[in-house]
Image (cartoon, rainbow, N blue to C red; front, side, top):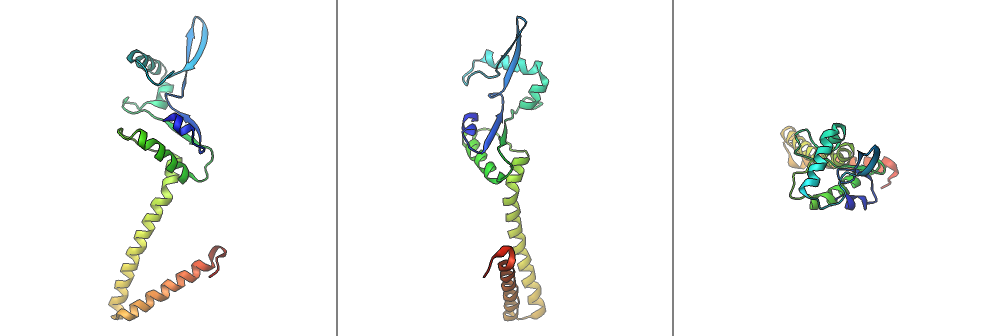
Length: 171
């Protein structure tokens, strides 16, 4: 997963157990090595990583949940512009790989990338509900379907004209 994410041109840095380093003291010398040296590992090597993380709780907090049921991967974008595209790309890379696992996305980049679509969908639903309520109130007051249609047409044409004059658009 980390290799595929690093291949993306939108991802600057990935922090996870597979990309982290470990520092050990060997015979008075500091040795820096990969925390997970290779993909296929024996049970003893996995236990060695577990022991290392338990000895270093600050490092463990970055990668493993408190109840040891989840691990975390942090993916950092190059820039904060176009976070919706960054979010879509990360999800499209990760979902097929981790499809059989429980996945939770979070963080500022994910939320910022997700919000525009959620807001757009909510606004569309609210506008439809508002139009329906407005049509019902007009029908109750005017008691004529052609009159309600005319009022809605005037409102629609006014919105179209206002949208045409905004941001330099011309009709």
